[in-house]
Length: 473
Image (cartoon, rainbow, N blue to C red; front, side, top):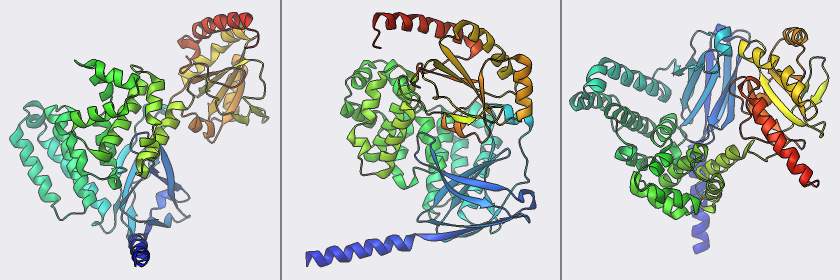
């Protein structure tokens, strides 16, 4: 009898999941986008900004596109194109015809600006009444109400005005609205309230308890999590009684840290676990704590073998992020064509240190740094091999610059941004120093004009001395 009941409940569970999953059809028409492809991503976890490719919209010569995606719950996707960052919420089984803004590519200045922020918007549909439309309408209404009442809210901190805004928003999103929209409303309003009245995180952090893991990859949750708990482990360690936090990290006392999170932020269960992972992630980069201890804490089976897949994925991604290009780790080999079309790999030779400079030869800052490489070559040519990895640049432009300035380096062209993405380069120039075995020497290597000469010179002098004393090293 027990066995029959087990089989029965298995089939109930199987079919309930199958019923939930459905094909969502997405289409659009806009001649501005003829021949283009928009790649949509999903976040992997709410902490690291890691992403996975979800689907693509490929436009034909008439600017038409169609694609099907299989999803089992309301899901968030995003894409970046031109000056835009487009966000989309899709429900299982929907038929969506998206409206696209007039295409505007980045200008030369925007393309080269490392601090450029795309214009974010929610995709809306021809139907005008789908989930992504409602989210878009909500954000516009909330922003408009705050802008209209900005003086009374931010300068006078009027509780009555905020209550009025909240009432209007509650009328826009009633209790009968989809749960995704209700959670979005709760978090957006709470963040606005915290910003207006300058609330401490512990004054409102219990709001996260109401929101289950199924919603953790929605943008409102990720924004609220990161703003609320940003650097909070460091702040708590600097406060009165903060030594307890430092001792808990140093002794790798996970239970003490969990108790701290639950007592201070009034969170429980899985919410406490995702909050603690966020705190440990930020604490690692603050360098106020033992980084080795934080790594061990995140490696704890409570995170890495958690029954909640998202907590397990978050821990795995944080560990990967913290260990990537860490001092002593082996860096990925870079294999690209040089200016003559010959493939060169940065790990071909093992007789010198390797100085990797990711640069953009079309910007003045990169050019000035690259010109200074001749001085570095004069000082360290016996021990240092220099590689310049250029982001997409016309070969003729690069050849002209390096020919005119006689830059002593192996110049490699990363036309597809393969290694720029792999090395997570965000601005140019950015540098990495490797030893003869392609292992990372510094957690942060300075650029040529920012003091690399002194940084590497002091290190090299000490390293050569130690090698003389210990020839086996």
